[in-house]
Amino acid sequence: MKRARIAWAGAVHDAVESDGQLELLTPAFKGRRVGFDEVVWLPPLAPVPRARTVLALGLNYADHAKELAFKPPTEPLAFAKGEASLIGHRGHTVRPAGVQNMHYECELAAVIGRTAKHVKRDDAYDFIAGYTVANDYAVRDYLENWYRPNLRVKNRDTGTPIGPWLVDAADIADPMNLALQTTVNGAVTQSGNTRDMVFDIATLIEYFTSFMTLNPGDLILTGTPDGVVDCQPGDVVITSIDGIGDLHNTITAA
Image (cartoon, rainbow, N blue to C red):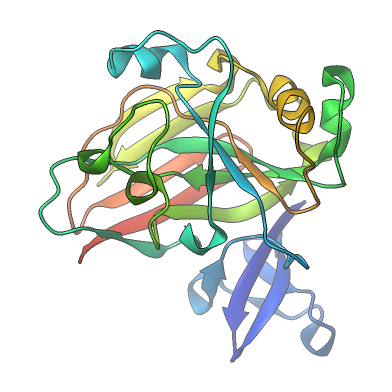
């Protein structure tokens, strides 16, 4: 099932995809269908009763590490992001004035479904609620350390589009064999496959939960393959993952 969270008619609604439309789940409107163009798309995540943990991976594809002139890491290179950086499908991401390199990053994002602590690799997929597409923009002008991006690189307001759908984990037969693609203004600029991750999703969950607790609604952004290019104001960037969806985003000037 493809789940969404939208704003429509002055309220926020949970919805599901149904025959090319959004079917609302809000009790007062339950069953009503609206078009994709009639709504404002929000990150497809239910509210949580605490700060949401958002973990992101650096250099988790060997080809991406190579294009940045690094060797693949020997253990996960992770950093945390704030939820305020998340925006929805068809949102606008601000390019800071004067920067030279602002790169998109098409990433598979795993959403945790239940409390996870000391999870073994073989059990890891039991703790995933679903998957969505993330575009983890990086302003590389501000980079001080390739291995640990600072806040201005990765934690900017509007800097992490996510969506449009949260796809139930049960509907994805093999999350480690999904094609990824990015287009900029209709031209393909990035392609890859999740099978090329240095550390797969199960390994990441085992690693993170060995020293921290993950809670329902927390996110793991799993890294990007090679093919990142600079994006300018006005560019339309579509990050796509087979079976998950096509996430549309437009760059705007500061």
